[in-house]
Length: 118
Image (cartoon, rainbow, N blue to C red; front, side):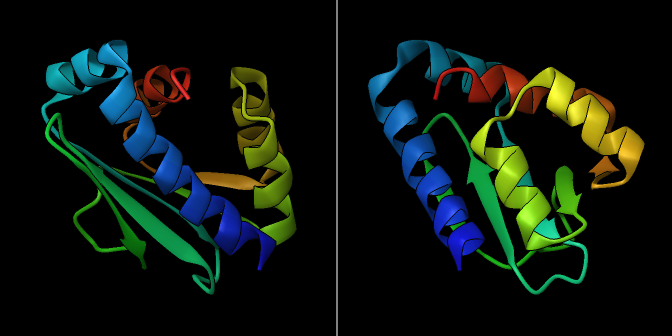
């Protein structure tokens, strides 16, 4: 339940950043569209985000057309990781198997560049 709430709140924060922070909107304009999602490996908890310069939409589930997916081993790993995200945490999560990336690693860099505005 804690992870579901965190992912929902992340959507609220992304929407707020888009409406209040010009630098966030400028970054989105460079990408034009950025669709990504977060889920546990068993897909029991999943949420995706569709971001454009005009709007940010968030919904449950993981559609197949996402550019990037962050898959966590379990809800506890995801909660620990998402509460204090950093490049080091991403790297360590990938190496020890708590995090699996589905998509291009360049999209992960794009995501990190957007999340710094939150």
